[in-house]
Image (cartoon, rainbow, N blue to C red; front, side, top):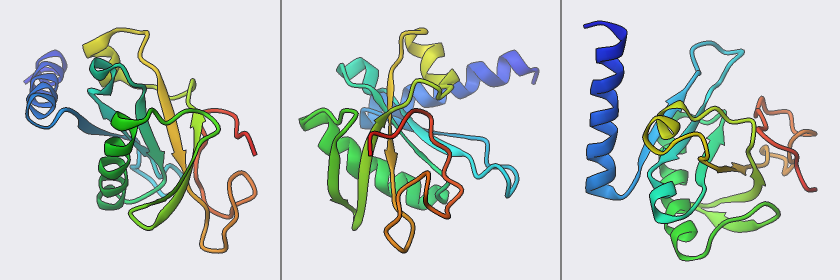
Length: 143
């Protein structure tokens, strides 16, 4: 299978997940310790909401937090400057994420796709960029 066919197969799989659940979760990067990667939703654009992303967490925890946050986001849009309290026992802050590359979402919805990032504190309660965690920010924090 060539690259174009692999992309087409992947997009069909993502569209199937969106049809079944309303959204899918796409991972990006994370192939080295220096690049812990990120995960973002695909499908919220069709519901009139920005996509959500999280950086530097394990795939299972990212999926758990994103799935829980989507349910909040679909009811009341999460916007830059919001704090969620606890989502699955994790406090989160929301920032606009204009620097996030969302190739899969953009392949399905076009270049106008927007996203917000859910940012989390380290174990001592420090928020990036003063946190010790390697959490990449895809926009400017408001705190």
